Amino acid sequence: QSALTQPASVSGSPGQSITISCTGTSSDVGGYNYVSWYQQHPGKAPKFMIYDVSKRPSGVSDRFSGSKSGNTASLTISGLQAEDEADYYCSSYTSRSTWVFGGGTKLTV
Amino acid sequence: QVQLVESGGGVVQPGGSLRLSCAASGFTLTNFGMHWVRQAPGKGLEWVTFIRYDGNKEYYADSVKGRFAISRDISTNTLYVEMNNLRTEDTAVYYCARTGSCSGDSCYSLAYWGQGTLVTVSS
Image (cartoon, rainbow over the protein chains, first blue to last red):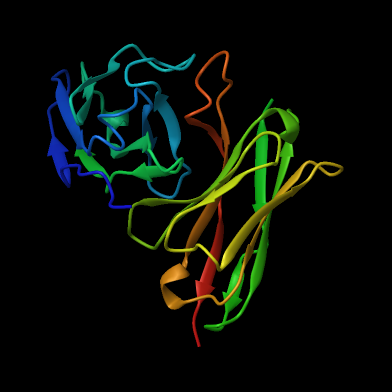
């Protein structure tokens, strides 16, 4: 159950767009459209941001979008705002009926 | 509204046991699958275990298989994880999380999270 691979950090200026990648295998990311993304601010619980690769839960800004190609999923944040600065984690359902998270990406705005 | 409140964390010696609780409100455990996820200090999220909505199947990460057991009490709408033979590497904040709705925001997502409870394994 190896963690999904995410860049350790990304950065962007207010108003810009950034993309965070999440690479797995055909047994998880590539095999299912069950990739989710979570935002976590320091000392807080994770917040659900994207599900089923590209769908947004009610209440999540449309500045957040998701996609997938092969074994790699991506989270794009457009129009960066200061409050977007946080850690971001991807997660995927796996062929073993388990879940796996990425190592996390620290976004600096 | 959905609320999840974890409790039971604390300091335990290596080899010891601990049971964490997650009191759920705003929904019924019989309608949703439930997860435990942990986060070691300064580290990322690690999925730990899942119990299906009907309580008939549980799944575990390799790192805890054979040592942890997830369960629930329908009468009190409470989720548990029994942790045995604890190791120093089990030190983490433990979160319970509810899946999304299969007819809405995906039963494969972790849609609602508690605030977590800290478990410290140390001699």
